[in-house]
Length: 269
Image 1 (tube, rainbow, N blue to C red):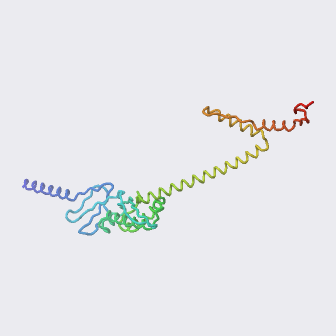
Image 2 (image 1 turned 90 degrees about the vertical axis):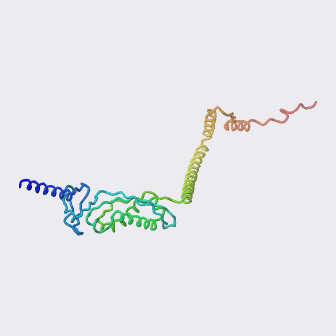
Image 3 (image 1 turned 180 degrees about the vertical axis):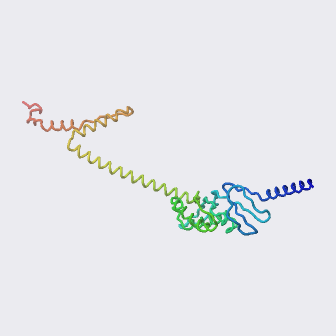
């Protein structure tokens, strides 16, 4: 009798252990468990930790609540100004409603990926090339709204969308390079012309000052001679000072005129 009781107890313990082993589930901290009993949603979402389900009756699906980083394959399209480009992006999203992510959509990751690709092609067709290259923040916000609108019903929240790269044809790259070079050359010519204008104004002002004081021109000439002589690699020809020439000219005009026969040949006897 005792042996039968022991045998029954051992069998019961083994059955309980097997049942516990089959019913035991562990939900991780970043997961939530959604239980379907006979195909229907049963009870609230199972929190992280140890939980039990009915073997053969309940089926629990674990949903990851971590932020998912999903690259969007490069999409080729034509912009509004008729330029063919290839644009790729990355989408950051997470599940905020585990039952909706299990029940409302078959595969929420695949659904978000397809919606991101479709929205990216739509953004390319509605934007100009300059917007894709320089106004990405606005495009990122518009792309995020386009993806987030249907994703709300899937229990998914779009955290961020970023356009990674914009690939242009080689011909367009060369055209943009020529345009940038022409623009830089135009700015260089404008700056050079402005410098010439400012220099001419300063030279005209200096000329007016020197015309009032003739000795200033002589001092400027001496400064130029000193600057050239400092190089010691050229022959310096020193002209007559202008003031010296003027002095000689005034001295010649002030000399008395000689009388008749004063400096002429001797008269004949």
